Image (cartoon, rainbow, N blue to C red):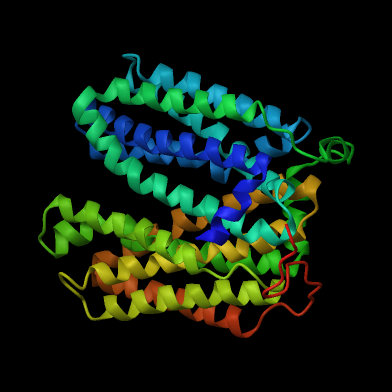
Length: 405
């Protein structure tokens, strides 16, 4: 825990983290409130699910393009402008508007998230010394998962107390707070980064494909992360359709995933060469997917049904050492666009794999479908752990190495 707090001594990273803390918590509260608003007005589960679809869709298509277009601007300007845009759009969602208009606004707000998150991720390595980058990356992941857990709980409670529209305004206010904090941000090397040739989607894709370590992380985690999402994505079908339980269990099982990520983040490896970190990521994915597959194969009921949900949280945590490798290997001027490309690949995996598992579950059931998919992910992870990339200039800090403060 002391190591996780170490990056906070650096002013610029502290500003990024405080902005993330406010906006992420408000964002999850807003998502809960918006889903409730759509369902109350339409009574349609499909339209309610469509809210999530239109907010995630920009990651797959527009994310890399928007990030490349905005890379010519100062990173602080992109961050502040994205936050202000989302604040305005979420405030509009609190107005009584037709459902199609609400979905369009949600999509536009979603378009601002990929460039914001890619630019913020790209900025983190410039705000801390190399020996603190792993801890900084882990702290931001821990904050995101804690915001997810608290946002779901606080969102429902806030809607119950003050109503849907005030909760949406709380989300808008959280983005304003984030923008205010980020106006004080001073990132080094911005002039040198912007002096490079114009960044394009193609250059971001090329940066990902040309580096064997980055390429290995992307395809491994895109598959494993997609398989790890299956229990959560098919949770309502599993709980209500196969276990015959109420919807309360769906929420408890979903909460087990970020809870597992939070605890695993504290002990995840954050020191080592690129090879060591990638092997650590693959090993964690192997443990998470393998354990979940083994438990699902026995068609568990309560209380053992919680075990695979806790296990897949370990797989999600494996992205921390993997992302650390990405952050140190890519050039600063390409990093944001490469992160956007990586996010698009991961989002595609998490959209396609659970859909395939859902089709398979129609014939063999959710638990067995999840078991087979997770077993495949475990085998892929085992290969990645046993056979790391061979071309290996290592940029990460050696195990145990720390420079004096």
